[in-house]
Image 1 (cartoon, helix red, strand yellow):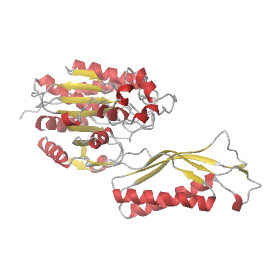
Image 2 (cartoon, rainbow, N blue to C red):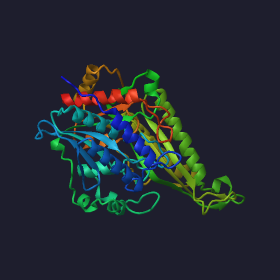
Image 3 (cartoon, rainbow, N blue to C red):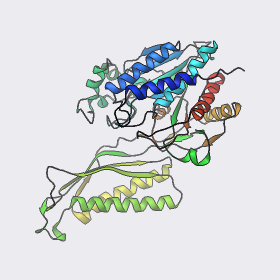
Image 4 (tube, rainbow, N blue to C red):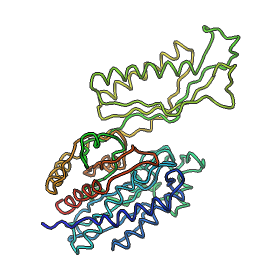
Length: 418
């Protein structure tokens, strides 16, 4: 069976244009439902049109770039990723997956070979939750699973709502209120996402590609706070203090100690306190802090470990009230559930990699991705990591062309054989 070579040159031209036209020294900034993401989608539209793909935008402004298949009545094969980035981030996070889909589709088109079914390359919106406190906005909107309440969440830098930003980008938030969808799970054969690894594992095992059987999820608290009582440091002995900072320090040390125990027992779970701050309009060197705001991200694929971590967190919240006289309000849990991806599709991906002589590593993803939205919508979902250098979410993200090409060949084989 002839599998056309991916058009890596077109994909690299796409990535180079993204880097140049969304630059925000250092790195790139492609703000979700903002000017940077809009520019990226315009570039993707131009490159897909050049490759001969059919391009449409759905009501959430996701791009659907379609290579017609031999039998268009069959459920389509979806691939792709997101094009937004964190502020001053790297050029490859998300974009490499869109580039891979374009490379494979353009390779088929150049060779005059139709895949068995439509191949749809997606460029989704608002995957990076630094902009809106909701996971996978664009993907979930397309699937009809984005909660209406998400439309009222506010962007971190502008304080304007998701609905307002969508309208700016000629999207239709009313369609989300009506639970419309542009991707029907019954008409989707599978979704396969490619993404740079953003970590050192593939470098360490000397593999260009990893197959991912599971994607981490877990509790995420973006609006947690500790409420105590402001007091003068010279007039508040220990017994009378309701010190929010001291309570937070205790919470961090105790939860990290429990995490260390789980890690030592070989349990896969992560806990990260990200934002941690007193109120700058109220704090002072001579005050006991009466309020402390923080974020907490707990994630993994080990369900028992996640449950144990959540139980320990609840105990520590109670201990803070007893030991420090404070109230800990974790706020809403916005985290997605872990996803254990389609085993049959994973096996097909492994066979595809073998067929094109690409040795693969098997590893879970510690980060969430659009693939979770497709998995939770009931669509068979696969996920591939591409070896990368210098981590992720930073301007130094890097990827070797030969590794990208190897991942594209696996995707092309899947597109022809599924």
